Length: 187
Image (tube, rainbow, N blue to C red; front, side, top):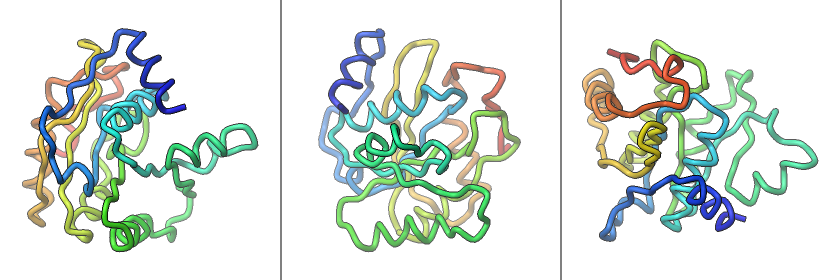
């Protein structure tokens, strides 16, 4: 099914900007995918990661799981979460996965929603910091129909300084719905 989605994405004219050389950090990291303004971003972003043959895990709100979708979502590495539960400890859950597995990738959409936000959620950053893994900046650009893997970012512990550098990478990326992507979030 993953190969089918990659093929369909290519048939719709999308191009992948992927590393030409082997990058060991790509197998053990927190990937952030932005901008995230459309339901289709999941399929595009996932296809990019699957194209690299990286076995990734995603958090997705439990409401997407039902009789029809559950087998697909489980096969794609999606972990259902209750976003309304403030005690679900998602950061700790992700850090536990990193502790248990040598090659582990967690993909996070730091906006946390497809609507415009003033600040990105800090979960991706806290996961990377606690698990002592890098953050890989990945993107979807609807204007150019390119998606791919950008630079590796090592969290310093100074979130405010680090997020400014991260946001600088996304300034020229174009969302499906530009009015929903706040390029000045966190700034």
